[in-house]
Image (cartoon, rainbow, N blue to C red; front, side):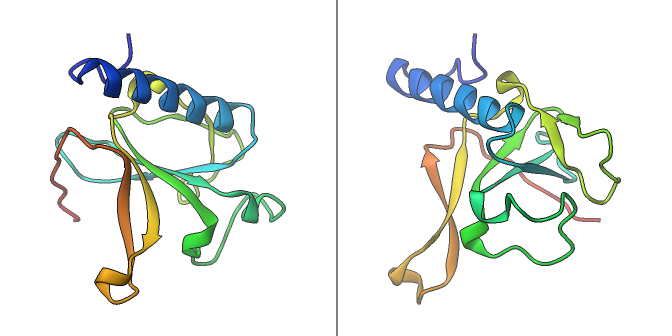
Amino acid sequence: MSSGSGLPPFEHAAFAVASRLISCLVTEQFLRALYLPIHSAQVTGILVILSTDSMYEPPVINRALRSQEIFALVPLRHPPIYHRSSADQHRLVDLVDPLDMYPAVFELSTSSSISGQQVCVPILNPVCMFTTSME
């Protein structure tokens, strides 16, 4: 059973496929992913899946990422399994469980209705709202 079990059947099926695909892309190292822990009652952190633009860089990226380098953002219920050489501040992910993903997958997009600013838009409808407190 996927973590989107509270969704209507079509959305549940779409999320089940998307979460498994994301898990395979990260686990099989077709795409790299970073984990950013956050302070929230519902979410432990955000999985940042990088696009192929950053695949040939060293494993530790010491610069700001451009929006084109981010494939998707996924909120997680539990931390993933980290790469064994990953330092605490650079949480490179080896394994992510699809069941740990909230049924919300986001991508960065430029919208002309918001004056060309980068905004985070859902790829799949987010069904859970969560609050964060940065300390």
